[in-house]
Every structure is written in structure tokens, then in C-alpha cells.
Image (tube, rainbow, N blue to C red; front, side, top):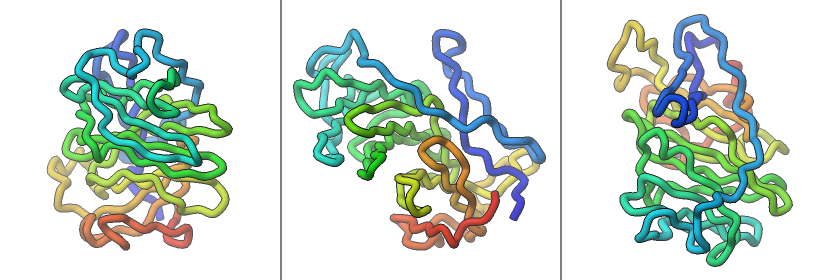
Length: 229
């Protein structure tokens, strides 16, 4: 099933080069950009043991992942934050780069899924939908995908969809050509599935609304629901 567009990967240019600049591919007939790839993310050098740059610092959410405690920390205003790998006192910290899009972190921003390859998603409201950053870990080593993911229909979550590939990302999109339909909020939606390497696994059929997707509010997508996007 071909779609006029099925691209949610958003390329974020470094704020030092062009603050807030985004590149999206949503035009009819355009090929998707290269899938996001993971790269080692070093410990943030100017963050203290408490994980903060700007006080007061707070732990917004905590998730246990295969015996490791993952904490989502936020600075004052929750407009910048980081993941602390290993709990209080750990110096292993990964920056929450999704906040560069203007995302404000909340206690609901963190979701993690354990496996032979574990993953955590840091997400928040963005441009009428959601944007999220995926961080993956194996054997105690964690890294962040370079590019965030976006759902214009407001659903972004980790799930196990395709057997034996580890956690995947489910992003719900409106089936809508924004060049001809500026307001897509009432158009059908479909779920798009990505591997944690950023490769597109497939898309579901269209549904009338987000609430019509199987299992909503915890959307359930199975491998036999997918076809080429």
C-alpha cells in the first residue's frame, strides 16, 4: 500500500548552526531521508552528580530497565533535561536533545522497554502532536539516536511489533497531504513502525481516528498488520 507520504523522521540541525532548524520530507513522491543512526553519546561534562545544569533539579520519572535505573531529570522549567543511567550518584548522563525542538518535559515523557537491546523514549508535545528521542542500551552501554521522531496525530511509543528485532517505535500519522489540506486533524490516521536503528518496518491500514486504532490508548500493532508504507 503506497502512501503519498510516510515520513516522520525529522532532521535536527545543531542549534549552534541553525537554532531550531528542521527538515521534513512530506511532499508527494519524495523519497525518505536516510534513517537515523545511533552514535555513542558521551557524559555531559558540565553536569554535576545530581544531573543538573540549572537548579532546582527534579527527577520527573524513573524506569527500571534490566536491573538498571533510568531517571529523567529536568532543570527549572523542564525545558532542558537528561537521562541519568544507573540512578542517583551515577555520572552516566545523556542529554535530552528533543527539548531543542521546544518540547517541555513532564512525568509522562519517559517510557522504557527492556530486552537484549533495551530502549527508552523521551517524548513531549510538539507542533500539535508529539516529538521523541530514542536512547538504546546494551550490556551497560547507552547511546542516543541522532534524529528525533515525530507523530502529527499525537501518539509515539515503544512497542514489540516484529519478532526478534527488539523494541520498536510506533508513530501515528495523519494520512494527509498538507500541501492541499492545511488542517489534517480530521483526516484518517495510520501507525508507522520503526526499528531502533530508524529503519521503517511498515505501516498499518488507515483508521478513522487515533481512538479507532486497536488497543487505544495503548495502541497494539502486530507484524501482520503491516504493509509497505
